[in-house]
Length: 252
Length: 59
Image (cartoon, rainbow over all chains, first blue to last red; front, side, top):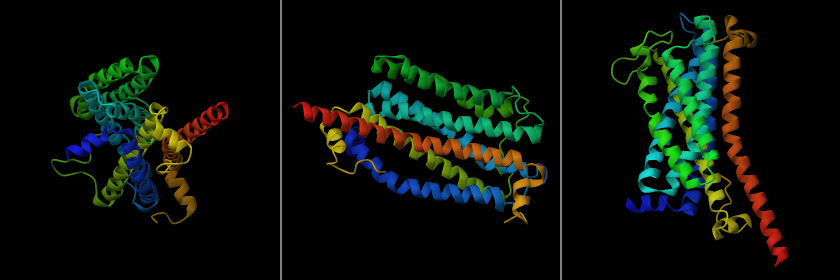
């Protein structure tokens, strides 16, 4: 068990492992995504109140769920990097930010598109939507902060602190629809208590949530591989890869 | 399929423009986050190969 965690700190080992994982995970993810999208878009019945516009749920909810989960990953990686100075944790934190920003953007954009036929407006400054916008700015802030420093160690520290401070926004996003009067509906899927969504709609939604998690994992690993290569560019194993020798040249 | 025809699926009782545009935008963003790191990795190897080639010629 401990040897596995020690190996995680080895850039060539992690690069090789991520390549093997991606070779399997990426095609499975794309297939699951295609099935989930087609199922939700064409094979489910419309909602009795919202009609067909509710089909946006199959991309909006998974994107929002993964955007929040991605922030946990980024903040935990930031904490590990800050406390134990683990190089791979720093790489994971940096790799998380653009992927998390992309999923937050999808959640905001599809929410705005869904809002027009449902609420009659693209945007309202209500608690849920505004706190999601803050989440996007936090992700973009981490990306910008990394680029703002010449000293990478200082950049890593500043980004880790920003990620951890930004964690205060996560419970606000979760509870915003309960704490404040909002146009946004409360959660339909509940871990404690009965969900208010029909099973025929829940299954494709569940598949899409799993698929979006898998997309996040793939993108995170791919971004980490690029970051590992850039940081290890002067080492022998990377030069060996570039010259065509060594283990699989990152075809994951 | 729930819809009786392709045009019904595209129109979705007036909601088609919202639903399809949301799905299209999502597909584009997801494709971008998957493709960009792959291209960066390829570019990295191409640049490093150039550097190594020049170093080989110099020595």
